[in-house]
Image 1 (cartoon, rainbow, N blue to C red):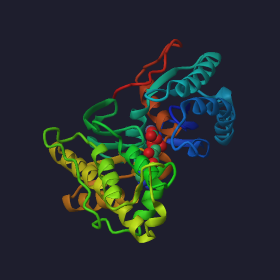
Image 2: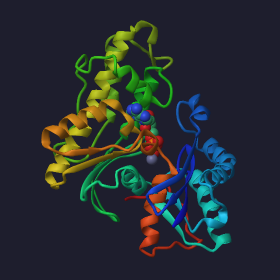
Image 3: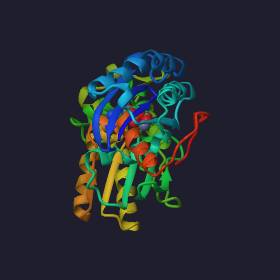
Length: 344
Ligand code: KG4
Ligand code: ZN
């Protein structure tokens, strides 16, 4: 089956063509990072306008790159939520139009299910059930993936998502947007034990996360050391040496990573899973990958990482999630609406 999939929930416009679910014939991603960078975060109005401009060329591009024509497409899958309403509607409208004109099956997909199943595109051998940690700018969710279509949310962040913490701390340090990749880079040179930032374990909710306290701890550290400018609401970056900045980044990153890893391992143990998969933008983080692998090895668990492109938002992951639903005979009607807040 040749399936066309579309993702436009946040600041990436992406279209993919998959063959029989697993084979990526094309997966084009147009990132809007350059547009949102100067605002220090995603501006919803600009995001939807940019999706509008990109969606047709990207869709044509994905079909061409797959070496097929629109007439060869047999089904269409699209992200229906969660995400930015205006952005979701762009992808949804194009997907509906194509499916309607061609008279082929159409299915709306939960973006989070896409992240959960993204690992199957590269590691179809992963053993079920597995634990999946979806860590992105909008989510920090820990799932028990029993089988395709059967997911249990074990815990999530009660405040900031992990990626959001990276972005906010980077902004505070004047490092630009998105913060994750810059902090990842700086951390490689820093000492993760240099500054003892707190780890929120939330004993009463063993699989939930909280990162806003950590963000406040970084702010307090800067203030206490005379490194914070109250007027600009930024660190006095000129007063911080490169070494000190790297230590700060590494200590912050380690505080995030330790909690993510501890809870993922604990979940695997409790749910008797031998595999852990990670997904979402923060899954690109090298510190997280190394620590998770180290701790999993000690426990005899196997860790699966998608490549960076499949960790970040992309249409191929939406395609594989849609493929399994189409296979099961699920279809959506053309009055399907986008849902900004959608749970999984
Ligand atoms: O999955 P994604 O592309 O979009 C959302 O659905 O949010 O994730 C983007 C998030 C941003 O917060 C970004 O700072 C973070 O992923 N990120 C990283 C890294 N690369 C991207 N965080 C830590 N380390 C990285 N290398
Ligand atoms: Zn995402």
